[in-house]
Length: 259
Image 1 (cartoon, one colour):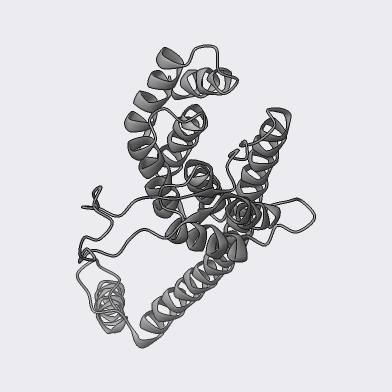
Image 2: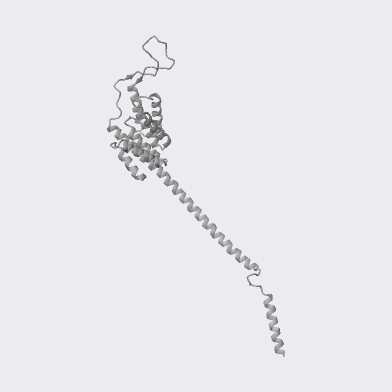
């Protein structure tokens, strides 16, 4: 009897002890220590993420620095390539003898509306000033000399050729000046101005010996501007209209690249 009571008492005591212990069932409220452990784990995880993000930012900055360096190097290489094309054009031009000097030193252009009557009243429109061919050639040569490898003063060359074109808009060297102005813009990577110069040459002087070269460089400019379809058409026109020109081979090479 005593043993039975004692056993019942022990069983009740165990039940009471279990009831007093913290529950570990899934739905039970976690203890403060458990909460602290969870918080520490989360903080540790966040710290790891922060370190990882900082590492990615550092790697990104390094990559951006490398990209900027590569872009700068690419611009230098593009300019060097354009200078090589300029040197090549100058060599070809010198082999061809350059533009001829007009035989007559002075060319008089009559005023609009003038007639046989020398005593007629002075026309309202001003007469075109006489052009001194020797002086014109000297000014052209001075502008062209700024492009020589020993100088390569492109800023002054642009100013000189623009001044020349303003002074001699219809001279025997105007088409040459337009071409070299476009070349200078091309070397300095002013693609829009280069394109405008080559287009003006092609429109105003369709019979000029500079047309094949202007077409080639127009194609180069369009390709550099990302207008590949237009560049392809220009190269195709050059090959079709001037198949024997020295620049036609370069146009064919670019056409293969564009395909």
